[in-house]
Image 1 (tube, rainbow over the protein chains, first blue to last red):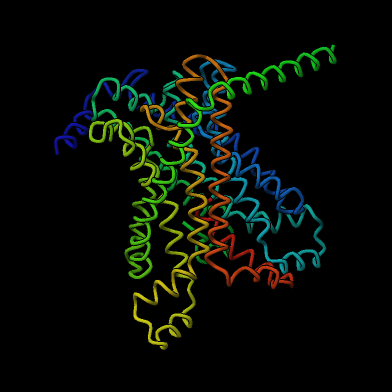
Image 2: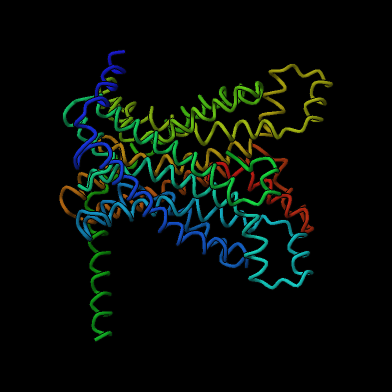
Length: 226
Length: 255
């Protein structure tokens, strides 16, 4: 009870809502790093997943590399890049991209790979060539799974972007780290709540996106997963 | 000029490898060995605790369907809480005991394990359930001897993702003074501005993840002897497609 009122008080303080260390500024930093990392990871993982899934070549290698990336300790990647390039945005982005690539790559690959061979036969029978089959058949069919991969990646990125505070570039992790060093639990809880809120917003955004871009015929099928 | 830089880069790489090797040889007994062991213990305990919580939750979610959506939302929200915050919040209660790392890590595995337990149990065919009932199996025996074995591959698929994710996440606990190989990375590497321990920590962490994955695959093969010959039975494209779709279904929620 005490903590709940403490957290409410923390949110109610006017100084939390203004200036470069206020909630809006930290929130913007956090979103900035997360979006940047997700865009880079998507630009790497989606094309590789599409091509390997479509051709079937290199799929095993891509999935194996994705699994290695999944096993990389985030703190290790962060530290290694800090030692090489110093504090700043680069280590955070490297760690977040390494985190986000595997789910996007695996889901894109599985989505394209899982296209019903009979549909591919039909597409070829209609005169579609390789690129047509990929972009007009396999990509739309794989889209729900690709979005799912992006969403999983986005949630992990949003939650892990808190480490940005450790290399001095702010973000919502700042509240968690400062709360710990000042021994104010309200601040830690407040920071964590803001991150959870952002993750919920991400989930809602992807539900909306799914509604907008997934073909109507595919949407009517049971959701692939949640 | 190009050749010169290539040669000097190669020399740098050789020097870096030699440095990593020397540091490893000199520190194998302490701190590498104990930290590796701590890392393995923390991850194993976390995943085991997660499974022990996920099994009853998953059973309830599969039996009483309306329970499942709110349960799923709950574990997904938990998953979004930054691990750093959970470690810090537990610190006043559990101090520097291993539980400060284990409890949050176990909670994170729930977002992966609970959906897989539910999916695994839901995919048990109805006629199999009815056959078991007709043979006089009570609910408990049916669960233990029929439903759980059929659900096992999907549950193990979840355990594989959960164990790899946990092994990679244990390192974050080094920020609160726990975290096995993460401490190698942080105290021996970062604070001394020395890359060798960081590289060793990363390599050992990845190796541990692969070892855990291999053990789980072996465990699944050992526990489901009836499934061993099945893959070679899927000879037609159609069958292979169906088999692959089934595997993909079991994987996608978690990947």
